[in-house]
Length: 411
Image: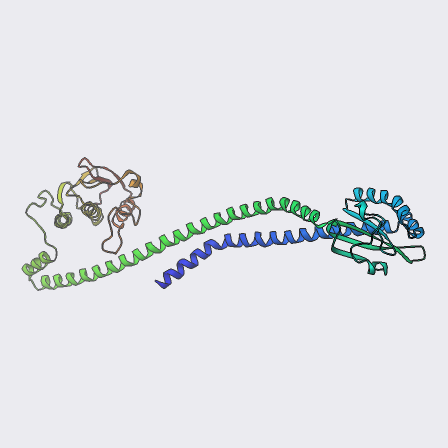
């Protein structure tokens, strides 16, 4: 039981492995793509605000206005605010703030805030350093760039700050994500279908291996049973040989009768061939034990060989084991060809299974012995094929199955 559980678990793991690999691969790839996309958007946004801020800080108009700005920044606002409005709209930024060297706003998107001190520190910028990062200001949280504005001598005369709202960056990221997700879902769908097809292929292979293993086990048990039967048969033959060699024929016949009782009361009087007569006697006794009656119609001139008796024995025995109560066996010789027929009143063979009855392992009977079935009809097919004969199965007028065969009679 532990081995079976381990085998089933390993088999299930193998079947699920392709799908799990697809899910993991698509998930990891999508996560990496999302992360890269977000980083790319933030990097591109940062470069944009920095480029706008740097370009304006070097503009002669901005520098000249800041150089002459005194305590009153009104004139400077009236000159630079229109420029700031145009740049905001053209560059797609949310705010552009120009300050003097005291940190007083000269431009701002909100008119009421012009002329006031900036809400975030620009001390480092006025000291000559640039800044790029996220801060919360008067219009919200923005990714902003702050750069110093210098005069011709290089002295800092003001600052210029350009920013884009984080909410806009998030919206851009969500838009990019909406474009990425269909591709990810498509890859997941294709990968899942491919992995499902692979799993189905593996499952069919597993089932085929299971069938082969079952057949091999059935063959092993059948071989074991046949070896036991052969050993027992050889033992009985040795006993019979010993009795006959010492002239104890009466005891030999009695021993044979005890091993395989034969009812000769209504035997086939028309059969004059020893091997065929003995075979039919044995079949009559065997079928009688199964509750079936054997009827015979024999018309042959030459001696019947073991191939023919083997075919008749297997067909008759198959009928009795299938549940027939009446089995009719006919063998007629015509122009050197033997025409045989075995018909019964049993359950017959369903039409869908008719083309499989001669396949090895096929049986309509349960395997109560555990030694495997489906050997007799396969043996019949092979024997007749070796003799270049034919065999067919159909519906008997008795209500059950009917097997007809033809093969050349041996001289």
